Image (cartoon, rainbow, N blue to C red; front, side, top):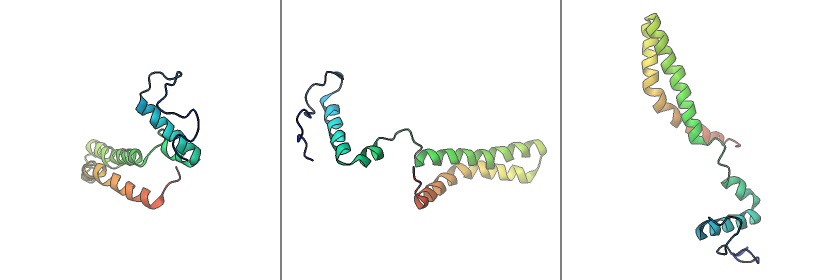
Length: 115
């Protein structure tokens, strides 16, 4: 489909329903609309901003790992004066935020989730 094949698809013409849009926005909307008509899967791949992406998942898993492996053992170790829990908590706080996100990234690349 060539740009301008259909009548009435002039991206530079004024659109009375959205008068605040710039010519660049209208051109972009026209290009995306043409791609949506040509390949319906394109719009689904491009315009899904509300789903969790791999970066969000990596940050969430890093936070959970830090809490479970670092903060909780450290807090319990401070209360009970157990050196093993203090050590696990200190190591967990130091390394979980650094090591977990890259490991999750590798895992997500290998599994290729369906979302």
